[in-house]
Amino acid sequence: MTTPARLRFWLVMLVLCTVIVLLCMAYVDGPTANYMYAHVPRGRLSFVVSHDLGRLVIFVALGFLFLLACGLWELSGRRLARWTEIPALCAWSLAWATAATVSLKRLFGRSDVDIWAGRNIAEGRAGIINHFHWLHGAGEYEAFPSGTTTVASAII
Image 1 (cartoon, rainbow, N blue to C red):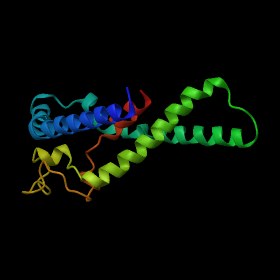
Image 2 (image 1 turned 90 degrees about the horizontal axis):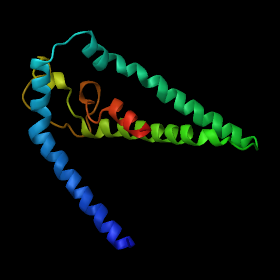
Image 3 (image 1 turned 30 degrees about the vertical axis):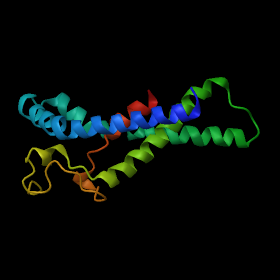
Image 4 (image 1 turned 30 degrees about the horizontal axis):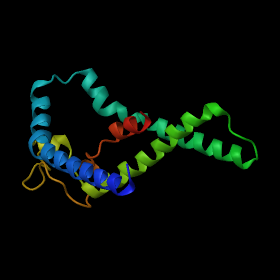
């Protein structure tokens, strides 16, 4: 495939992906969150999934430490072993995915699911529920993109 053909293909896929994401935001996102809250029992497993996954940030730190160790090893004039190639690529993916996620959360300012469903009464006022709040991402406005999903996707 020639370079102009690849560029056209990439642009068509970008537009298609954007349209699909916008349609999902409009017709799938909020109803799915409300359905899950109403019909899925909230037991220990849902608590672990929704709260304890934040503790996996230790893997981000380990990835950065691995990259630091690889860099120091190379700076000392030694060659890295062949087995370090895949972990180093995973660590770089993890680093870039984390940076992108933090930046995009601040950019999009997507409200938390508890706000969408009106369960957080203090924040559940008009204009807050189920919207993006551009450049206001902090606290309860950091629901998109999902950090856990981004990190898992980057490593995969």
